[in-house]
Length: 363
Length: 185
Image (tube, rainbow over all chains, first blue to last red):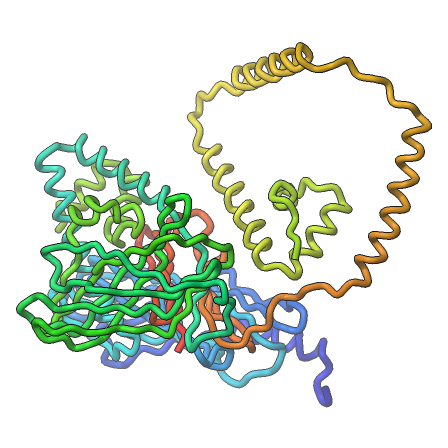
């Protein structure tokens, strides 16, 4: 190191890191504007030959447009540190009227080499805003329109369900439903997974190609026909699937949920296989992925299941499985709640049944 | 690589290992991500238990609970005495021999262990996304970017074959759902 000694460089980094690390950029005509930013307990500290920067900020945003907002997604970019990756923070299940403000919290940690950089390390930009009428504003570089619309459709489905429970079984029925939903959240089996693309070196010598068994729902617009994946003790990869559009409408995007069952009969949601493929009515498409799901703790996979978890039609409308379908096949336990169910259960847990009923009645 | 026993990791997480065992486990954790995750898991579990304990009813009778536990332990000890054989007094000479052999073994095994090559975490070749005890992150050779989870809320994590990972939780302060997402291209 020529001009800078290591301690001097470290001191310089520490002094400037927290203040200059993050820049927030929203378009001038954005219907969402930044009111304030709280930097809380942000800090930088050295770790070996690297610098760890913990950034905690709460952005307070205002709905400067005319329509109520249902969701917002911010892109988080750190191109110098992770040029091959991106991150985003979304807040779905909002109900923000024109002129109201709402918080978006961003808690991130950067690990980067100890060297001087020019300009902010992290940029936060608006990717999109979803309104009450399902219209959208934003560059949508991360396909946040699709994700937020699907969450909103699920939110409407779930609010409708809980309202029907309230109407049919009264407040005590709703309370029972909340307790069951809470138990489902706590008991959801989880699997540690690393995801990489472009085929990393693997240990699949002991692996084998397994066939999917599919859950076939008559009301789903797509019918899964066949599928396989390479499975070893510590990874699953190269999934190939064949699906047919049996609806009368063109489809432009779909997702297949992927469930693994181990030798002890335990089931886990390994992940989902998304596919952006135009599919006319009656047409069959094949999907293949170059993604590897790696399990840090070995899993003795014995069988795999697949199911259609989301379909986007050509006109931007969505199909999502009904709650009956998910509960009938015990999938609700594996895939977890929708964002809206998560929010409503939390509201019940923190503020009680009255607050939950008031909230349901707001929609 | 041989891993420490689960009970050793649990005791390490709680800071309850003796110094020598603690040093050995810490050395292992430096090279073993799997065990680091295990330790983090124990710490999180301990955190949850502390929270759960804090939520016990205000009128919970600790004295009575302690008395019941003592009674149960006493009962177990008495039952054990009924079935165990009488103890024989250990010879002091035999103990000295055992201590000498143990010292020699420590020197030999320690010398061998310090000279053997130790495994290191595998070098990262391509970007990946993963869930950790702190959140979800993009890891690349030059650095990493993690979106952190709150400590106190249950988190739903969803991997996707498009090279992405999602973590979803309810912010305890605002009551709003937050969905963090990381992608590799």
